[in-house]
Amino acid sequence: MAELDKLKQKFVAGAVVGNIAVAGIALGDRIISVIGFGLTEGVPNTFSGIVDLTAEFKVTAAGIINNAGGTSSAAKILFVQWEAKAGGRVSTTGGRSSY
Image (cartoon, rainbow, N blue to C red; front, top):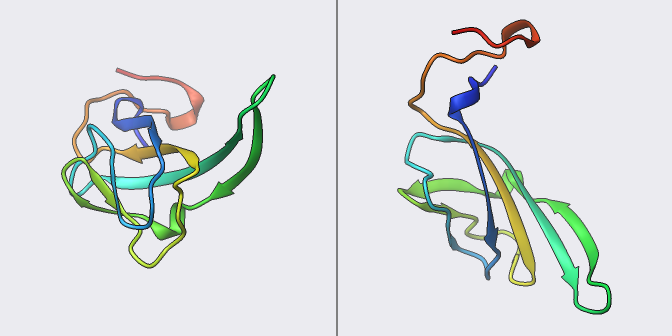
């Protein structure tokens, strides 16, 4: 199970297929999920769809994830979760934190 201080997450703007900047992600980090949220502007703004894009993405460079040959996320906001390769000592084993 991922250690708490290794679990990272960011909201980023989607883009056409290819590179997407995610500050803080590094080569060797493991992507846990990439979820796309479509938005429809209006009063009020609403979600127009949620899609799991996790299988399409890989970390290809520091600060970059890529889904070459995948689905365009240009009209979406992406929620990216990953496990950092380096971390500390806080564990979620047994549902309790330990130091």
